[in-house]
Image (tube, rainbow over all chains, first blue to last red; front, side, top):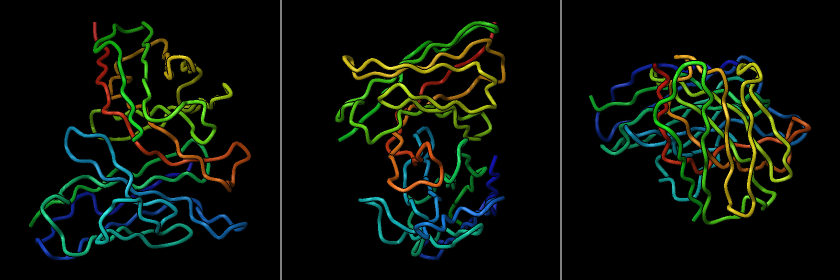
Length: 113
Length: 128
């Protein structure tokens, strides 16, 4: 199985500042045939299901605010949130869909400093 | 819009079989563009992929479940189902159904998908 490792586990950030969450995969998620990375990011608020934010490592899902952005390729990926807002407090997960069984990172808890 | 809703027992005894239903609205489960999936979240927060069923009946199960999982679907009711046998306390989790959005070009010959949307989830506790 492809192992996904996120860092940090806990991230306190001041309102209005930038939050950066890292995700590393044990194998490359880049498919050479189309140069696409098979990596998604989800946001989960307490008591709610995960919500898709980004797929293809950098494509924002419809309706997701522009302050969320994804980057990276191969085995190293980043989710950035610029201008942190109170409603961004949540747990964030990365997920690989390069090869089943699809696997998730352990999650990063984003909080207000 | 597409919505999914899980239903099933909140508590199951060890060694018994769990049966869950996912009711889909807003899209036909026969649309051919979706992998109807189950994912569970353990009490510590970890997310574990269980598997999917395609409209054709094709299935994939996570090998970690050691052949305990079976999925099926009912096109007439727009529902799909999960059965999980030989339950232990380690199967205690929130179970989510989700639509796997099919990706046109995939590294795997089976195709691939990410998950959007998810149902609200149902907590299943395995306890005597």
